[in-house]
Length: 458
Image 1 (tube, rainbow, N blue to C red):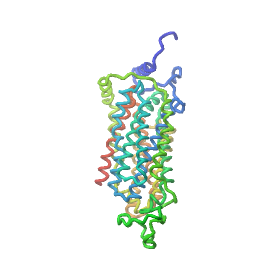
Image 2: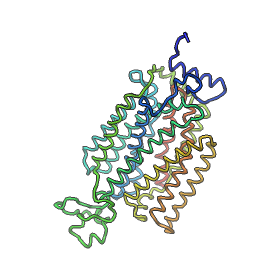
Image 3: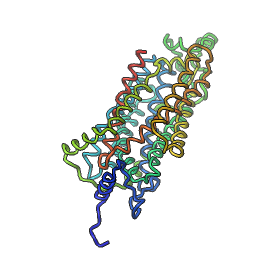
Image 4: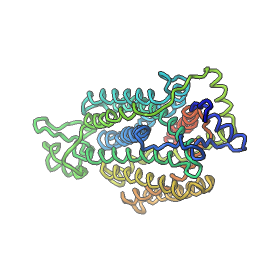
């Protein structure tokens, strides 16, 4: 009682050494066996900023990817190759998470490894989205893609620091509750994706986005661009050749539209409202290690069998699960008349089912073998994806049938996702949380462009 009080970092290292000596390789640094000082409530005011960051990540990743379908496929009539390339460009900075992880762990700002990078990343993202709003509603689709990619760099920067924070909290969970923090943050991310897709559903299902050549101003003549007019409903065009552009086509679900600037500013509002939560995050100050010494220890960690096998599995699974028919999106628009509202309903169902799946696994399957989960999930994903052949060969073409098969396949993929991501926490040593987690996710995300190339060649 009268001895020197240990610093937080000393307690972490001591707990880690004790675990290693006991023959275990699990970094359980919870306070459940002691005075309870290190038990963390992620919903408390000191740590709810982590959840806010993941919710905003869901807004950005869901908004930037889901916006591509109505803008490129529905409104611009883009080709499948352009759609695939645009998606890869928007997500490109997910392949560079290791860079931000290195910065977060090796270069503390004013002694803090996480909080400053979360704030800087989100401020950068908000700045890009404000610049996008200034471009107006007639922004070129290619320029829109580049702006969204640049905004994604900002939130990936913040996300990596939040990942490090999440791993730090997860290390302090009792073994019997391990996985609670990780499923909680990914659930928040999915809630963010559901929220932004609801906005896209309600805001981009109107005539301006879904009716080619639609003109809300009667004083502006209808376009004579052949590329646009050939996509107009033939019956509507023939019945009113001079005023067809002022009519609402059947593909429009609502009579109103949200502009791209309004969409961008709505995300900025959430980011701005969350900044105070990031500033209130409780974080111990840390001294930076010598860079070469840090990298040397990190390299030893990566060479561990448990670590490189997780990386290898992540890369192989992302290549195989990421390969898809590049013509699927335009084909669905033609074969199934999958307009914006239906597409967004499908995406919302996907995110909701993923959210349910995460919590189902957290509650009932945390103690089930990861190998069995991966095997079962992979087989069931294959079964539901095979049902698309019924659409290809015109056996049964129905948009709701496609939505059912796609959503069901994603639910089964949840088993693979959580098994691979839960193992990342167990191999990330204290002090190396951000760089280890980002290294593994970078390795898996870096093969996504390869999946896109394979998809396009097939």
